[in-house]
Length: 326
Image (tube, rainbow, N blue to C red; front, side, top):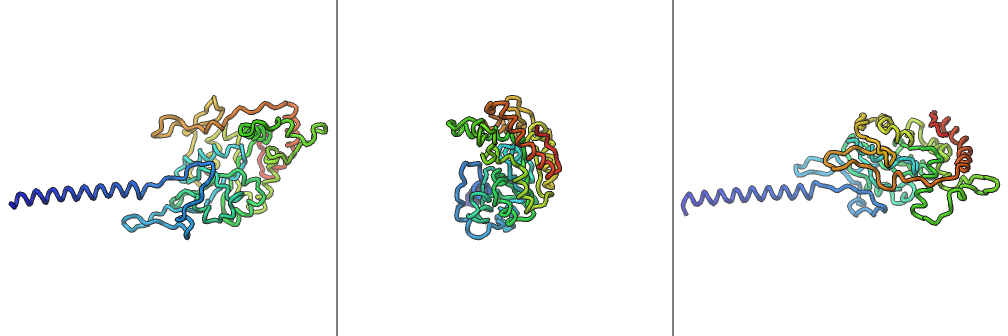
């Protein structure tokens, strides 16, 4: 075999070896380093065995250095209220690079508490040092056991409550109920315990949720007022950037989500996110948001306003803020 042949053979082997290393590196990057996030689902699946064995720690990369991204318990919770604007707030906050939020509602503190904190942690998205992990489950605000359970997880957790005029919130709640169960009685008949006396049924869930002072009182037994931030559901629609600015301040974050991120969708009647980079269309919340409300007898509306007035006044005094609900 001539020297020239040996050189050609060596050259080919070098190219083949380089291509093999390149292919191996690409396969490693595509399979080992890319991780799919937990997407929003109607039911949470039981986590795989790897999440349940021990505590998830830091992960090493190929060079032996440690990544700092890890699953942590949340440092902030959107705890309520249902039909107040919690989904919009979560989606808006997810624009912030220092927030890592779970898309689905885990219902840990109200439904799945027996599964334990390791299960709860395994649900959370991975986060880097300095990023805030958060989730939202609006049922937490009204569930009696939840404040104590949250406190036992963390005394320093930051709590966010989105509140909205309790009368329009109740109608929105009812509108959602009839979309799922069309045969339920009309709103007007469910509002009253006794129609002839006009006594309001304050235990009917759509009305009971709106007794904000009563629910907040339980949270204030376990957490100082400074750890609870209230978002106006009405202002979240009329001035999303202003409300988001205050939430970012409360979380100790730079105001990165600003008015340049929003535009008002006249058809839906609420703000949408402007077209993100790499996407062909703006991002609005799903079809179930911004539904046309059921039409309600004006006299019943007035009775509800009268019923809520003292409860609202008490709530304003507790929080030092008048939300202007008529």
